[in-house]
Length: 204
Length: 281
Image 1 (cartoon, each protein chain N blue to C red):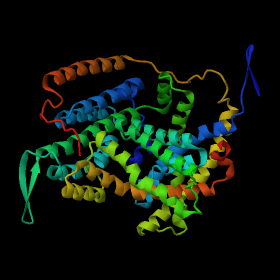
Image 2: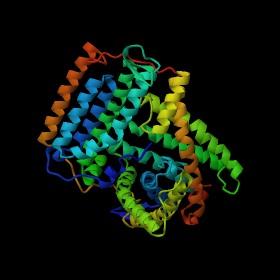
Image 3: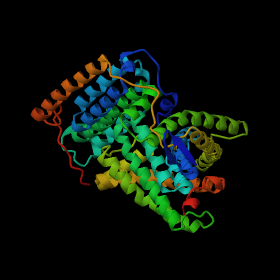
């Protein structure tokens, strides 16, 4: 296609997949947000605001998932959560990376549930190391404002006296259900999405 | 990460005719950054509380106090309620005994260091959250987009940001419709944990499929308006500094000088004289 701009003429490359990816980014950010709202409605025992990052990575590739997740946190930081919350956007990039890594190694097949154990371990035990670092260095650590994590935090701190360990265990017990459930949910949804929206296959 | 306070974003901007609303979004954005940085520079719960009260006064001027107080009540107060008692007793760097409380025959000591830590950090975050709300709730979406244009951000990012903020209330409404539809089909909400996760799934699947269908429509609409065309993008809405903005900037400069002076003379904890802890596990 050629667009005439006065005397100059510029060729425009057809951008079907590209424009779809650009439109997908705000959708991922909004779906992350709505996931949190639905968690409030259903009282599900998760945070529910990172599943769309995983879904975005599964269907549109690493960059769409990572940018969509990051954008969600930027919006929340500029609106409701305050400036320091932008740092959680980097956690979304880590989630997108773990998902992308799992896709590349074939750990995202629902028909092979044993292979799903590895990403679940990464999400449950390794990813919380990163969130603990953010929680302590940017938010001061300490107990969360939910009773169960706060109780776990208090008991670990009382028994070990280790501030970092208490924060890690507190993060881990919230991340294990949240990320594993989010990962499985994203896999289920990705398996039901019409092929025309799956951009990852076009890229590979 | 939590979705606490989500209803705030859903309701979006509050349209009023106040000085805060009339001021330029750049001024409010710079104020948001400025106060958030100072909240982190000082480790002093009295000074941080003064920052917070200052923002609440501005929120009152902007007639958004109720909304801002709601977020403080939902996020900051529970955080303090959990943090202060636990850290007063268990904080690893506790050394200054405040008092002992007898509970079921046990003498439980409460220390100052943990108390101060448990109070200062939520207040810091409180300052950041309330200043963000002051910016967001008093800035209409058109001004917000104009602000991003003024900051010369890539138009694809501006589109993504604007589209996400527009999509959120739409998708929340759609989620509500799906929820009502599922309730009328017999969805039970007073169920165990596993069933609640299942409920989450049956609400999220139709919502995701519906929003992905709209992705294609949006992509076609964007392309039909020349989104990818190699031309300079312009903004329909322009923003300009007014007298109130200059007055605000002068105020910020004066307070910056005062706070720098306080920092140099009295340190990072000028009122309550706390020690800095290097978190080392």
